[in-house]
Image (cartoon, rainbow, N blue to C red; front, side):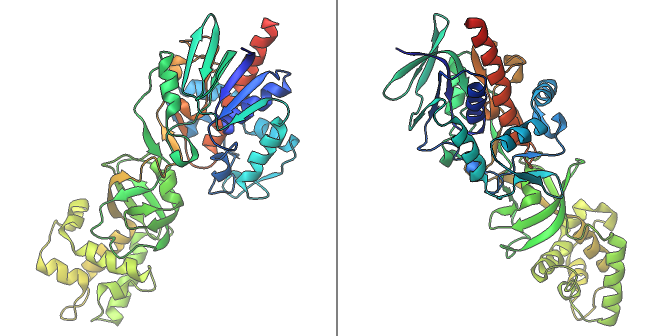
Length: 425
């Protein structure tokens, strides 16, 4: 049986970059095993297919983990400037958008995959359609079995991805391989994913998109961006970024007009109500918010639950309150009702009841604790075993942070393996 210097399980961002760095360091007897029929399938879909590879505002504070210092150390050894230099040297061209997200100028994630694929072709051995069934250690070496063969190596790299987006082949098999070497795995849940919410007030809003500020009640976290209403809850850029901080049972607060204070909105509504004394509340909101959103807000402001959120309104409910909020022709919309509508626009609340799950998530929250690997991401349970990327209990905010982590892990592990190989020789 041929003995390789290293076997890499997984041909995604971490695995591909690790293989490239090993080849560049002169370690060519490397075997890359990929279960799919092509390399980098998930990488080619990242950033909504546009390839958001990193962020100019890079730092450990943008990650969720059990050991922030380890994340900071990995990023310090191979950060965004190192990544862009490496990808540019392969023939790519990259630029940052107005919020720091870095994309290839082609705006095609597949072009990033191609840069890496072209760079490793002919330099290392690649086996496609090779799903790893088991891995073990014996006699100081690693033995990896696929469905039809067994391979041997001095180092083993698990870069299998997490459980997010299993249609790309990341169904969580890597966690079982890690457990086989004595590692533990924290509870796993989807992140950077659409949120399911209570539906009472958003029925009829499917497909409506608005530029909003969305926050988690009781948390300082607030995201500004697109909010898309769906038949299950909410999606859009703001929601994806917020989902990294969000859990089932949280309450979302939506501000439909983040650039305008409630007092200004209330003043406009009162003036409009004075001009049109018999106009309904939902019609008063036309020209201020989307008309379907206006209908939703009129119903929301009339409901007793609203007063539970805003006890300063007196906690009143019942028929009189509903009539005032709706602004029925008999009485019009009074000043108090205008103030309530303004507050609703600035603080529309949606209880979170879940997510769309791993099938729709971009990353996995949870994994092997960083306390179980050393500074080079080598296992403290089995020397020579390296755990990379999403397998570890590290996930980043939306905006290129998760891909940067994947590339950084690949670089750090490759440097460590190359050092071991030089010592071995």
